[in-house]
Length: 166
Image: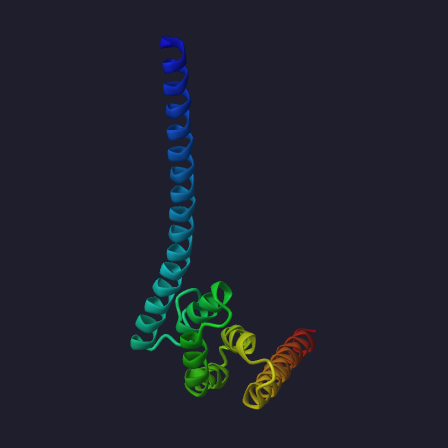
């Protein structure tokens, strides 16, 4: 009789342990899912906050690695349908294109190229960006011609000084 009682007690304890460990595993799995989803949204929230800070500091497309466009594009990598990021990218496009044009006008062509590529990541078919791409190409060609003219002048000066020395 004692043996039967101990067997029943052992089975009951095993059942309780099994039920508890199953609930604990389920609770742990749900906690992991909650943490993972909170982590994603927290990451998104952090990036949105960084983007807002960049906007307030007038860092729309520059400096590289710390500007609103890069932060918003990072949000879209985490959540491609994030309406906040999409709306802000659309609303900032006109001001951002002005920044690209300023860089082109200042002959900072490598920076203009980087900024233009950043904007094209968001909207590759934008007409204004296509125009800026044409302006950037023209500025590069002009710079090449100016460099060639300077080289020709230097070559001519060297030739004339070499001829004068003889």
